Amino acid sequence: MTVTTYAAALIDALRLSMEEDPRVAIVGSAVLGLGPQRGLMDPIREAFADRIFDPPTAEAALVSLGVGAAMAGARPFIDVGTASFVYVGWSPLINEAAVAHYMSGGQLRVPVVYHMLHGLRGGGAAQHSGSPQGMLWNAPGLEIVMPSCPADAKGLLRTAIRSDNPTIFIDHAKLLGAEGPVPDGDYAIAFGQADIKRPGRDVTIVATSFSVTTALAAAELLAADGIEAEVVDPRTLVPLDHATILDSVGRTGRLVVVDEGHLSCGVASEIAAIVAEEGFDRLRAPIVRVTRSDVPTPFSKPLEDAITPSADKICAAVRRVLGR
Image (tube, rainbow, N blue to C red; front, side, top):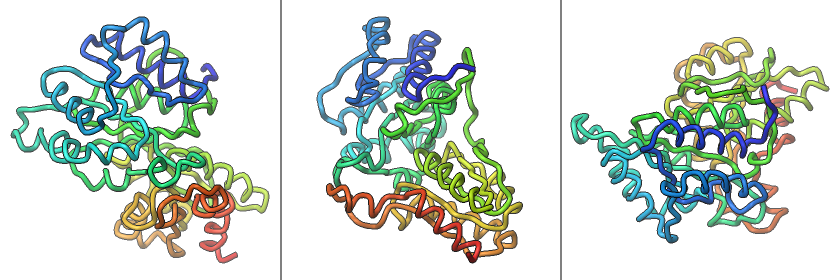
């Protein structure tokens, strides 16, 4: 195991994929945004200059390019940038990439990865703070990946690039500098396998992406009060590991779901509905969701903080389901 950053693990997976398969190309090289980690892309740019392209700011064209290149035999990694920008490319993503395999009777494959940075970043306001995972989950045909730590980022990206399906790979800018142990050498993590980030007996907290970090911080606070929270990270939304989530709820009898998307029709709502339908008999208390509020994201920091899922809000939700 080597301790490294989320950003470095992500770039290592990209490097390994490009070394492994000459069909892999990167379109949009600001994979790590404009923050301090962006220099990690420089060695890849130098080593694979003929397979890295910097397009103009035209997200609809960028998404369309990924669909066409994948249908033609390439394995493009399309960096959309800020997740809110994918809305501009909604039609080619939903009406082409997601459905091409089905509509062609299996004759077409679309092995493209769309990479984006989602979430509340601090001052991103309404147009740069989007978390579209719930909306994307409502489009059958897309795989959706949301890592929460360096090891998962590397292992899941290796699987995403090898997949024959269009895959949405969603990172969070606040995770890029996070450090953690990463297995040495090359490895991949299969889709549809949730991970228990912290075992516990009193309540299950299912969280995604950066919200896993927040949930783990909440679990530490709760432990000081004698409450042991189990933190489950689905890692992928499509496919979703129902069994691990339901097994955890079966042990604890209580569920809190945390996601940075909006409350209505979001990831937390869907996971809560799945448990209510498939595991209602295992619940000893109503399910509680902790999400972003159903409002446009404000630029003001105090107002943004007010709508952000936090460790304190998760602790309050846990105490609510425990009746404390």
